[in-house]
Length: 395
Ligand SMILES: Cc1ncc(COP(=O)(O)O)c(C=O)c1O
Image (cartoon, rainbow, N blue to C red; front, side, top):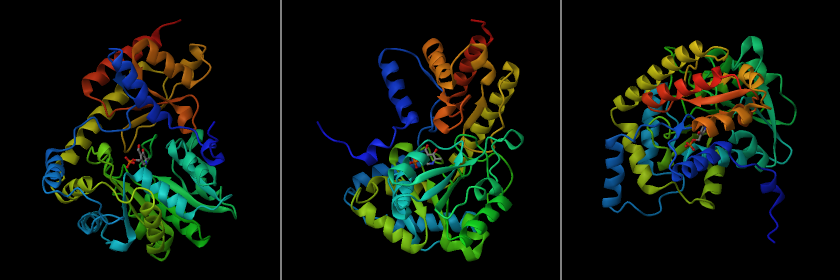
């Protein structure tokens, strides 16, 4: 029998990726599934981006590229940053990868030594703790489940977890699963504190363009100018441009770190997909009205969701400022139905209503469920009606 490595055995599979498989299996059985579990836009990739991909194929741009991404794409990233944040990272600071999940994986592989600690937010995106473990590190949690400050991404929550072994902190803003944004001052304090301890601050901003508030999104690389070499940003085109399957993410990091990440990418994926890179150039360089239209629609759905959750009652939530998830506390219904936990509630809802919701335990937050509103409005209306009827039933 094959003996698996200790390293891989320390890691558990992704519960959200598993849901995609469950959905396909149920659909193959002819079931009509309402998917509130999706971590991806329900919109198609905008036409002009698809056409750029098709043109790349027709022009035979179908070979290996430079490992860290083509210059044309890096320049498009530079222009986007200059436009949005008023600063231009150097090309040598940019590493384009097959998705920001892989960017983050490369980054952690490049900085973590066995026994190093990485402070991650809780609730967390499901892959953070597993990636840290896979690198031989230890995940430590900045607690954002405090009743008085539910989901608030505070500098204090991170600073309180600092130890001599801390190697990096991960900030995810806007957050998956809570939709919360870390405000400018908290982010500044966090970067300032950790850079002075020689700890890298990693900002996963893959939902940066999906924001519903008027507050400007702080530029992490500019907040503490003297700490720039201790800040890393991981970004994605997946959510912003409905391009999850194209697999394009990127990291903007200090040059020495970029070189280290590139070395690992050289020996693993070689380069991000050539065709997707051309599509990404179009996405970043063209008119952004398709993005705005998607964000407007998410906002409409978010507001409808909030109104309906209030009507259903007994479900506690914090209105999301960004991303496309509600992370809601279902303790009342779990207790009322005599369920063991949030997983049992999610499973019962799947079996009885054919609705997919993600248990909060997957994000380190028992009793919660994550509900994605990256789903068509008609499905949201029908799904919430079914959930309301189900929760009102006394079993
Ligand atoms: C917080 C967060 N970071 C990173 C990713 C990875 O996205 P991608 O690899 O498609 O760029 C996701 C995807 O769900 C996410 O939610």
